[in-house]
Length: 100
Image (cartoon, rainbow, N blue to C red; front, side):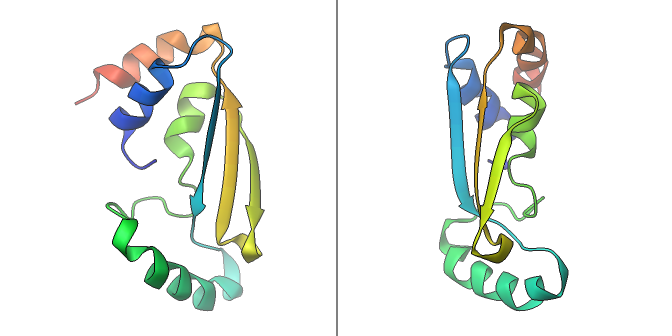
């Protein structure tokens, strides 16, 4: 979810009105996050390739699909996000896919 090119390529494979669902760990906000983020990082580290924007890992997906439905669990340390590929998002997808 942290590679704009990979997310764009996955969204490109969807048909119009296709649904994209993503889930995983994320950093929690606030004082609770101080403890939770350390625990989340420890169990997620083998699977993380980029620590950029770990509080909103669905950012690139949201840029391509528009507003997403995002649910947070485990006191903000996990998420499930889903959205729909609308025909109007194709121009944005073409721009994102062209990025190196």
